[in-house]
Length: 118
Image (cartoon, rainbow, N blue to C red; front, side):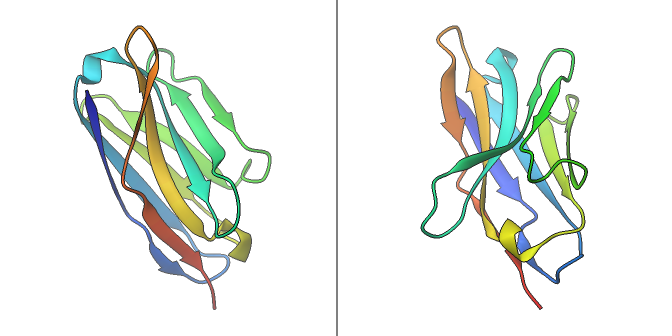
């Protein structure tokens, strides 16, 4: 089992920045990749960015490329999402995700609200 705890959401003006954090605990040795997803009202949950545990290979949604950066601190078992040049369309609940174990089980955090508004 993997537990995920997100933090760092809030209200920010357009053009501003926020950094989300996701701390993993439990069977962290089994995690192969971690990611951030988001879900806006009335929309499906979508992948924002992902990073592998080994090698740190990253992947981004086209809508956030050049603005968001995913990174990890293995010593702290924490993944970050640095969000710059935020737009109103980035408003959503952001969820941390971990893929772990031989059968690649998905684990989710509770979500953190990000609101971009003037």
